[in-house]
Length: 464
Image (cartoon, rainbow, N blue to C red; front, side, top):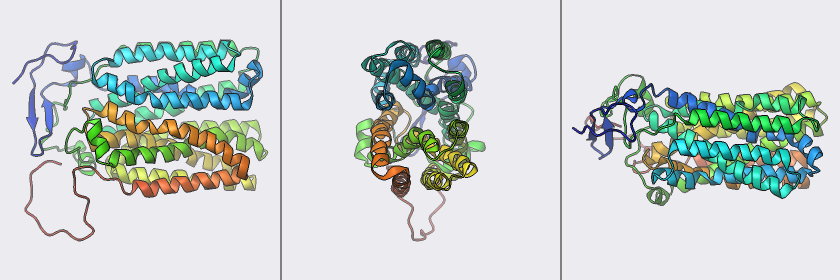
């Protein structure tokens, strides 16, 4: 039994031991969360959630500020579109290098959060004070995107490390903050934001993000590798966690990024997220313009976006909880199908000029358009283990940088060529194709369930 102190521990060293199961998986048991942190691991849910709330204004409220920004700076609609697209590109693209730096010990979670807070502030100062669109692209798109991406990746990976026995619900809850945290800003940018006050509003928004990330990030800390909660037996799980683990079996080994790619499953996850995130970004980018195009008033347009943000976020928490009961893959397929059906519904409601129906399908679209993110975040460690999760998830999440162009750029081309109806039909079809692709997902190293009834076998006491 070792009495080594945990990484940079703030509490007195606690004894721990490393045990292996029948498949050779290692579990570090004996240390409680309070031994490592000095307090409950619940803080590693609440603080990341608060940080995700703070950075949500970048993506989910930007569309509400576009008209004022265009008028104040003399930008075209195309200029503001590219500013957000560049932000999406760098926000998603930084996940892999940030994860690699974390796992090499070159970037601690705390340092990452502090760096991200400064970069996020610079992003808002850029669109507040620079009329030059290239300066805004560099400031908001590049610096703000990198800052928000570091924060996003750090928060999501943090939760999975601290709750390896039931990561679905916890990951979904934290991920949800990235959507509904924008709700106050959606209405601020729609009703209390104009060319007379835009600089003050944007500067204060950037300062709020800086303070929230810096303060909450000061408490961030990873558990030791292979850590497992001391009060749960990893070789004979029972109680509330047993059902979740039975439906979402632990990875058969700790896959390095190279090994994960070679399984073929990680590239499949990447392609699925490219398609689903592309449809989601399309909805975020064009729902308000479509509402205005069919003659709905600004209140309906703003409310539809507000509903999308709230349901987008709460839906992430709900499906995370459901996935611990239904299974991660089944829940993912369900969510992607809902996203596809919602695109047809939004188009139908708009064609009928039915405001109530439009708001309903905005609700459904919001649910489907965000709920798949925590499923991918939880599936990656389920399939490939926790030790390289920051890098492996970074690789999968990098698909969103392609989606930013696919959902926005190609979506814009589809609207120009086929109108909103044609574009929404295409988006719905892409989502349903992604659902079919997700049906082929399977955990590497495990035999796929046979369609033929299996022969009776002796009962095994090997843990899942």
